[in-house]
Image: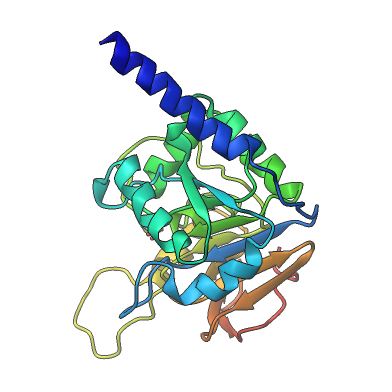
Length: 264
Ligand code: ASP
């Protein structure tokens, strides 16, 4: 029993030692984010389509802090971290889950790079509030810690999480999120299927409903698209166009590589 306890302490110490004490590469102070619609595009593996980008994006990081709080399909933090670790190992990076640290706030403050994975946005945001980590993430990212978000991890970069596609299976204390962008995100954006007999709301209708009560713009990010933030430059990346929903205007398309700084 004591032995198990001691082993657990030593294991914890080793993880934190590896993460914090390894000689850190010098990071820039420029805000740097990849805010992706999805982690996986059809027919390829987890993060595959982004790996080349991620090599550059996390150039200054040997170790990535993974935040597995969104728990897609209800998987555990450990299971989810193993998936992220496998993808990052292919570009020579180590991934450690935030749940492996004694103190999540220290883990974020010391991280060389942060990845917040997708899953259920309500579960993610609830846990970020519970651990008081939301404002800490915002501070370190504003000070240059490179950030990757996929899906739910991208939703939280907007002003609020109200334009998620997820079911409210938990009740976060607030829908307010990181506000690293001055608009909201709708990831996995889906166009209406021509000729479909489905009578449920389209994504466009749901965003119209959002605009009956809120005025901030929303970007519908199709799978395979991402928003690249470098300092004050905000750019749409990937092969596809994105759909923009501005309060009181007809929705419209914006081409890839477009500058998104006008969107506020
Ligand atoms: N459930 C999505 C995800 O994969 C988020 C969303 O659709 O809003 O993280």
